[in-house]
Image 1 (tube, rainbow, N blue to C red):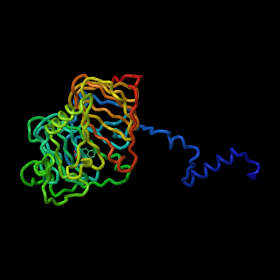
Image 2 (image 1 turned 60 degrees about the horizontal axis):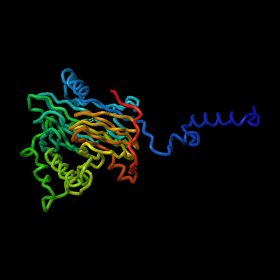
Image 3 (image 1 turned 30 degrees about the vertical axis):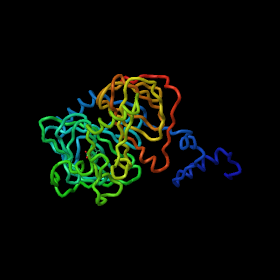
Length: 359
Ligand code: 1HN
């Protein structure tokens, strides 16, 4: 049959078939998916309840040993919009990690960066490159890219913290390296605990003749809750409510404490109205203290201590507290900012609530 006898439709179909055979695709049939007018994340707004996560973590503590191979008893929050992937958003990993009494999670290092935000327990330390970093509720502990880290619980109580990682972003960039073969399973400690805080944790003070350790990485690895609390108290007194927000920075540069993960703390007091904001990039919020609710793209989420929720990219989000409340957050904002992709838009009126999250 000569091509003259074929309709355009048939020839197109044949063309698309031939394209597929040689692993090519036309742009013109999928422009709308590739180029939405504004970001359309597959991740959906969602909330994970502390009581549910706490009970599940405890059961994992009874049934699953922590050790080499599995490496960590971390239970990932899997966004229902992301087809079963263990990601909170396309760029952020969030998990609850449970370390039982007298357990240790062995030493390893990887190119993805991680932060820990402590929710329950006291007296555990994470050793970061030989420095034992003590962990108390409300503390932020950094394990920067390629730093050795092991977690140690020498107490009679379990400890639970939030893990935030840039892992999905690093996977998307095909830049994951993992080194499970440390010199020892538990690191040898170099001197007294909390060296990074003693050397680099002075308020507005740094050692004069310091050598640059690792360019782009904060040499301060612990941000104690007492300091965060005091900073929020002062900022709220100065600026007034209903919300003040702070970011955790590398004291040597004033830039984000982690290059790929924005770490923030928000204090919200009752009063309003809340102003909805859309931002490029996603955020995981961890309720540290207080109760209230957030409206994310018209959906209302009520929250209490330990609850975690996600604000996907370009979703309108507003937060309101019933009592003084503190929300820790990790974001991918430093990545978007570094690449010139960060944008935000303040909406003029509170959102209409179209549904309520009941999970
Ligand atoms: C990891 O190494 C830790 O070191 C926690 O505590 C969570 C999630 C994915 C990959 C590595 C940790 C992790 C992780």
